[in-house]
Image (cartoon, rainbow, N blue to C red; front, top):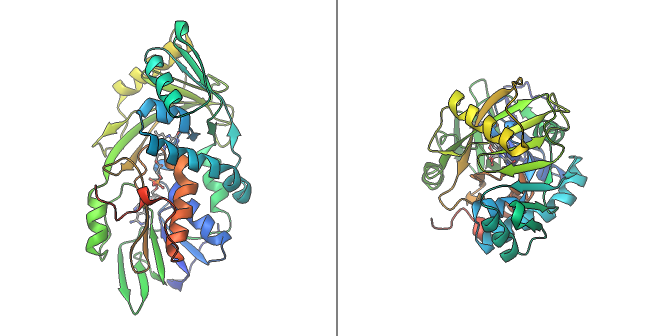
Amino acid sequence: MPLINSPSASSDVVVLGAGAFGLATAAELRLAGYKVTVVAPEGGAASAIAAGMIAPAMETAIDGLSREQSAILKRSRVLWADFATRTGIHLQHMPAEWRGEGADRLATSLENNEFEYTYLPDHQWIVTEEDAKLDPEAALAVLSQGVERINATAKAVRFENDVWTVDFGAGSITAPHVVVATGAAAAIDGMPEVLTALISKIIPVRGQIGITHERLADHVIRGPGAYIAPVNAGSYEGGSVVGATMETGVREVATDAQLCEQMTNAAWALLGHEPVEIDMEWRAGIRGASPDGMPMAGPVARGLHVALAPRRNGWLLAPLVAGQVVAGLEGLSLPEAALDPSRTF
Ligand SMILES: Cc1cc2nc3c(=O)[nH]c(=O)nc-3n(C[C@H](O)[C@H](O)[C@H](O)COP(=O)(O)OP(=O)(O)OC[C@H]3O[C@@H](n4cnc5c(N)ncnc54)[C@H](O)[C@@H]3O)c2cc1C
């Protein structure tokens, strides 16, 4: 990713944030011919530590989503095939299993939402082939290619003479459009009231996840208290992740040993194995969630757009959100009205 050294510069679009939403939006804009600059500090993206499951079926069933919400997840899953081809992300077809208590409820939800699955009630076991997976570290690297980036935190924004200026301490950059994709972070000085009000509604949800070089499973296995997924690229290639907590209202990024141990034990139980001591690096990321659990994507003011608050499914929803932001930026009607940031919560 080329870095901009000049203390002041201009672009067609400045994207604030380098997580799944910011970089997917930047990629779509770049592919549409815009000059795009991403402003974000190094590290700190929840997207980087995610498991990377692209899982409309399991997420619908586990979260008990409505038919409308499930249909949004499905539409983004459909967009993924083309998005992966155009950006070069390696999207892996991967079966996902559910093992254990709750299988009845999940099977009912899969049935009601017309997913393909196999269910063995006597074994409390479900498998679906509808979900997929990517490796976040590799996907973020691919999405970063060819995008100009300023490694800095945006400190303030202002709008004058139809142009936005983003100040990042060491300099500033101007553009007619700014996309705010700052995850669960606080509002930035100078943002209009309509945006600060929206950002104030975003609820932090901490997720803790462990990553290991050990191969614990060759596909996704989910169940009460934990999931296990293989890692097929990046610095833990050949390893696995064990996740993930959903801690609503928690912003603390230090990991919690007790919760991590509970997840580890739940993971071993899913694997039908006595717990074994393995090296595991525990990480925590803060997801941003809107009050209705679906992202906010589209324009909020002249030249100002958001790609925010997906809760659990930022990777799954990235192509849909990116496409909606581009449509809004080009003055087209928004394809997904349910994600319009002007909806009432
Ligand atoms: C443990 C865990 C597991 C997950 N597993 C999955 C999964 O399997 N599948 C899935 O689809 N999703 C998963 N997710 C993704 C997650 O649920 C989110 O939906 C997603 O990461 C949100 O992406 P984002 O781009 O909105 O935010 P983030 O990834 O948090 O990115 C925000 C970006 O904004 C930057 N930023 C913040 N403030 C500023 C500022 N002032 N100026 C400039 N930049 C700023 C940050 O540095 C960062 O680059 C998981 C998340 C966690 C924590």
